[in-house]
Amino acid sequence: MKLSRYLKIFPSPDRPGHVILYSTLRGSVAAVPAETLAALQQGAFPVEGCDALTRLGMLVEDPDAEKEQMRDLVARVNAQTRHFLVSVVLNLDCNLDCGYCFEGEFRCGHYMSGETADLLVAMLVRERISQGWDVTASFYGGEPLLSQDLIRRISQPLQEAARSHGVKYAFTLVTNGTLLDRDTALELLPLGLQGAKFTLDGPREIHDVQRPYASGAGSFDIVATNLAQVCDLISIQLGANFRPENYREFPRLLDQLPLYGITPDKLSVMMFTPVVSTGGCSDFNTGCALSEAPWLMEAAPFLREAALARGYRAPTLKPSACIVELVDNLVVDCTGKFYKCPAFMGSEEMSIGSLTEGLKDYRGSHGIGNWQVEACLECCYLPLCFGGCRFVSRLQGKALTEVDCRRKFYDATLEQTVLQNLTYLAPRKKAAAPTAPFQVATPPY
Image 1 (cartoon, rainbow, N blue to C red):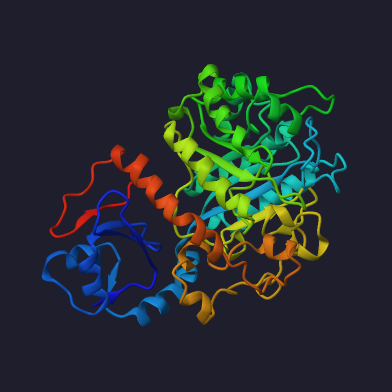
Image 2 (image 1 turned 90 degrees about the vertical axis):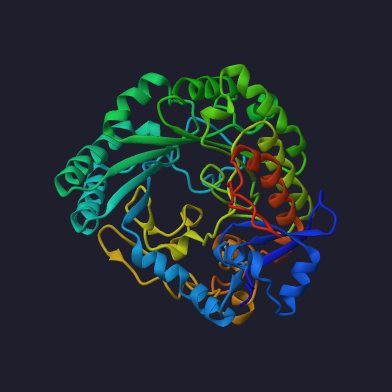
């Protein structure tokens, strides 16, 4: 047995002479004496505790075999999935005027036509639902609730087809939150509404500057009020887009939310993400567009801790790959063109087909498997990034075949993240019984 290469080791902050082992592949955590770690590194394996470390993925029989399993991991996930996720851009129109909107350069008030919506329905029924796939649509824009007629036109036949084929159909909304009041949510629930992504960009005075109505009026109060009205009906993700000059003010947002009745139990996750000044889908962003900027390496753990300390759920650490690697994800814009990532919309060269042409082979153009090189396969952070974000590579002027390396970011932040989980999340879940001489806990996050 040998130590996994996908393992990070940190000093224990509260137990002298101990270290914390963290598996980037399994998300598992173990505390062991430093002398035990030294013995393991030298190939000496005490009887007690080895079985536990093996179960946690920290000890493996053959590190080379583990590396080859990592090489095939995304392919195995793609082969096993039977759940198709489609982001549907219903329009390029909005009632807000956010200064950082990545659609600003090509927003033209265009709406998806009924004919295009019907082609989308036909494609999803023919290629997914009738083949035994569950389908979840994420309606996006612009502001998708300016196109409620299209939501109905798409969802009703998909819901009927799903029932007839014994699969599931549901949809979520990526909305600015100004139009999703309780009455609207109740009307959409029978059609399959399952959840929504809202955005509040910090405390009121910051949000109202960053996300005003087109008239210039602030939108914080209406968004927060609507969120409070629907959070007991559907799952809510709340996003907040911060800048280097204002991120330290964002914890005040978390203190304002309970004043509207938005307590931690009402949100599925609280996500803080940086504004990408040169483009990017800030409303849709789940934090993939990271960078090595020193301020962000400080801001990301600072804001995550602020959320956890107040009882809100933060995004979890888990194996994840760029959306372009996942065959069960597709973006369809309002003209019927296909993209692999919402941030690529508006760039004709990034389109990978259309509802009329079908899906093109994008493996070469989008750098599929660009991380399947020795430098990445040997990296302990590979399970957390799989080559990083193709959009960031593009912003940096690199070909999509080049990786967006996250080593510096994780070197600077991963230890803090693991300790945050142990501090704030472990007490919410009883640890597994320790196996001497180790103190082993299954991951609570």
